[in-house]
Length: 561
Image 1 (cartoon, helix red, strand yellow):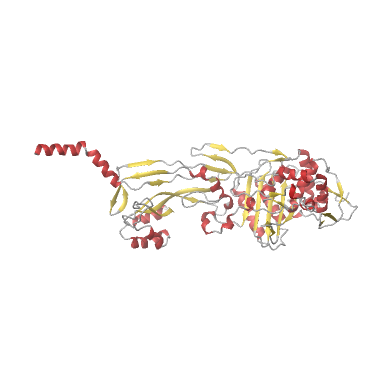
Image 2: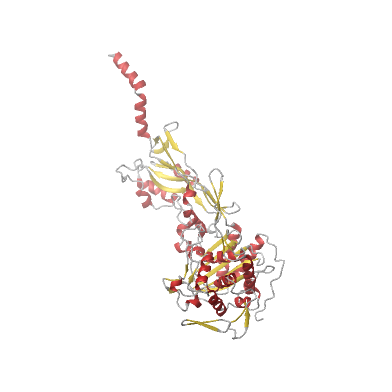
């Protein structure tokens, strides 16, 4: 009998021991725990951090081990800042959809390490903490409408965080391990069974945005708009040669570090989602097309007259000129002549005007990389009425975003070559390998000579006495640009107020930067805001990038030769 018992013990302790031990292991292994993949960072063009993830902790419960759910909720609520009723729902035993008893419930995500330590010091039964990450945006509202934000699960919800979510988020890992219930607190058994799949960190984005310039553009836009009641406004700064967006500001804005407390309407990127009639900033496109088609020359003069009629509509100039008085192109643009623009458009014809609108990028998204970008609208030729021959050249019956118009002006600045704007310079993977984004496909819209001639004509807007854009002049630099006033059409009806803008480039003799400032004022009466804001933004931009003052003086324009 003793021999039989001895043999059986040997079998149990030596032969069958691994099987029994393995069976016991699975009784002690806890539920799989997600090991978060560090989300990639977002940097400006200089390497300054705009958004990144930091080490944090998550707090969780095993409802099967929680002894007193009510007391546990009472203890955790003030630390985690979560209502007791919400915590209680995750502390009581519950059945999952698969019919199994839940052994893991998130209580809080992105908790500071120090706070997690305080939770563990409470030694609450069934409560544990583990590694997590939290998204931080050091600049708060800096470029917030571009960056967007992430949810608690670190998935991008808006802005670049959403558009490049697959690039930034990486692949989460997973860990399962034996847990002991010392005093009913969850604790991993040292040296016990453990299996872990390493997470794959996400890649990072390097933007074209310049943090310092972005800050100043936002500051100027906000300060300027305090002068009047503005519903929305945008400012865009483009590198005319590369199409890179150096700054893109929206008003209103929000704190991306605390996005959930903001109004959803404050989170829109106005430069890419707000569409309105461009108004008179559309007129240089008409002149550029006529120059390219050989219909006018830089020294062409026109007999404007005070009015012109198209269909059932009479179009007037705010500064009427008597019939028979010759006016230069520079004078016509400086005083924003509707009559002169329509007469030039008549020579161009609707087919060619429509084709140039599309060539300048109107009617199509720029593809800058932000979700929800509007395409705007160019009036189809089969929808033209008799009055459209007057309204379309003046930038009415047309819808465009501020970024679309800035890119169109950048084509004029870039010797007639259209370069689609872009926000992302390169992607940096977890190993530091840099992959520049693809070069945008460019197209020639104007010849270099005609683009240069058009820029010179546009200088009259900021230099001719009494011109509409003299407030946009930057001392020491030649500036070419145009003012505009348009309407906003919403669901087929004209929205109250007006949309005012100034778009320009400097130095006009060798353009480096294009800036567009657009604002919608529901109450009207704020038309002089855009030009001064442009002036301050362009002055800072030129000094920031150490662009030397223009070495030449603007031409001496003659309005009435």
